[in-house]
Image 1 (cartoon, rainbow, N blue to C red):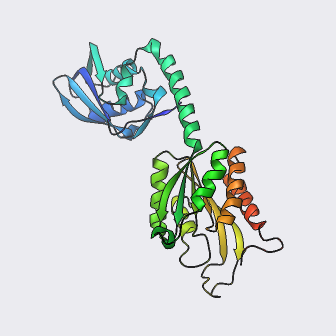
Image 2: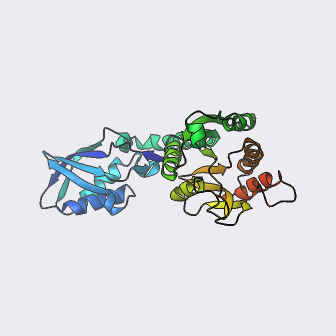
Image 3: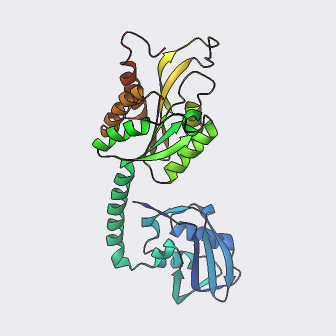
Length: 296
């Protein structure tokens, strides 16, 4: 059953209630129980003129827990010592919590429609791909980004909707922030290119670790730390999960991107878990250098 995003409209008015020595925490707890919320998710913000105002702290609520639940809410609150509910008491909200007042004979139809809509929305989100390119040479326009073109070519043939997610410098907080915003904007797949190497400027894996500390990685190449510009032992690709979205970190060279994104398509099609998906991506890229452990 889908959740409802309250979009900040969290107040609920109960009209037709009289209090006489009632404890407000008990009223809030009773309301939370009626709406299948945690006790601390509801509190009373105002009482006046036979009106009781509740505020829901949870940013999202389960639709089935609130749709058509007006009478359950009134009954639960009315069972608190010191609370009297008028026979014609009503519940109101300016936001989506207004579904509390939905007629009970319409609730099942409403829930079925919501399930169908949620399924279609999730299917659409799963097809939306944003491509984030990293590196100062791309950020300042010195180098033309061919990776977006390559990813779009491959993924759009597979039925995905590919859009640019922007260019970000080699800074893990900036990369993490961009990925986080794209997830919030409804992209189900995000592909980053560049910044996965062994030099100190390569920060994409570290960025994704900020968002998903348990992300899955696979090694493309191993270097001796301190040799040349290498400050890390490995070149790695990664797959992270961020609020339900999958984030694939690919290398920067377009030849490697093309090989890796073909494996991304297969992993998404087969719904592979991150650990299997990242190894498939790494294997496709390693195959570009037969007989070696990876790029040198």
